[in-house]
Length: 241
Image 1 (tube, one colour):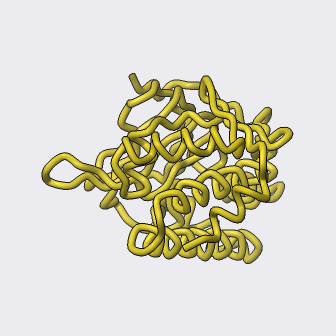
Image 2: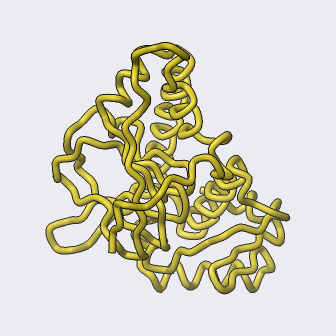
Image 3: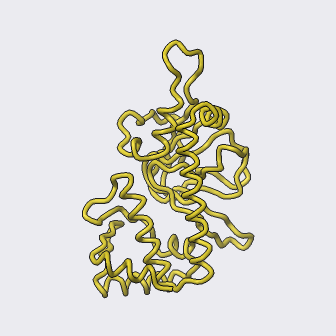
């Protein structure tokens, strides 16, 4: 159940300084004696499987994940879905989201989640006034485009084991930037269905590859926590075609 009365935890956020969210909130603050207002922002909480946003709904806000995991996905007419990206703490759901009143994808919580709704008009105004903030947004946009291109290549041409290995390494890299990896160990609240929806595989294929990774001592995975045991081995596998 979504709760839109959640209090702000921005002051104690552990990923603020390593995410675009921090650049946005800090860069949009008006200087002393300025009549400009800060970003209008609403904080929300939700449970696993809650819909944070449904495709094509009208919204005046941009969504930023503060705590927990979510997925951005497109649903087909027959009920199947393609996960476009996994969202971790500090993520803006999409670099282009602030520029449209409706989005063609949905967002669903994977775990218990806390997120922020930031007024789109305030967001765009802040970008236009702060060159450093615009540069940070440009970097985010470029990164998300690169990730989209990698997804397309993976879905079209890469083997199942390579796809799974690349996703694990990609998530570890993103989490490490946010300070959420310790000794190559990190939260991994994704099941076989999440991974199959992201990688264009069936759940049985995902389960087989994960079992093989465990048997080959590449990873340890239990209770929603993944540890990369053999980083170089997983990297070699991720760069195979």
